[in-house]
Image (cartoon, rainbow, N blue to C red; front, side, top):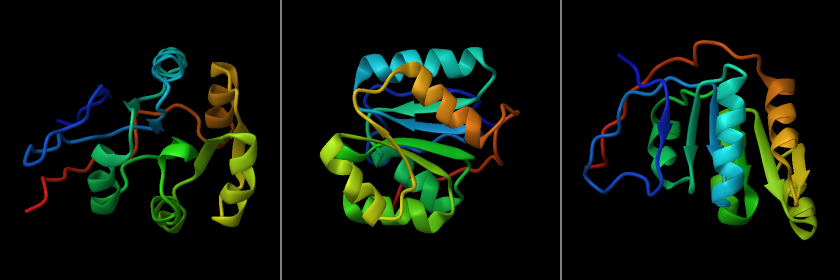
Length: 146
């Protein structure tokens, strides 16, 4: 059975098996308040959400099978290679970026950019514009790296 909701405050530990995941939205925001409120609002609207403070724990899932329909990511916390990987995956990405990071986002191929400060409503509207709530994307399972 796929895990329908995951809220990880610190992520998984090395060597720990990642659970099966099926979700509409990957929410990677370092601001704990924005992450918590966006998670709550997206759930209220019927989305299945995986919310994380960093991309690290989700990176293995994305490499294994990309079980998400949309990703919302804080650009300040991602390397250029992380961003390029998300773009190459074909996953629709909404970047949350500071005014100075906006050009970087566009240079890296991101077309949907929310400029900080960002409201929960802006995050939800961006997701809603890309994906209607469903029972989650395709489930997949990933093991810890060997």
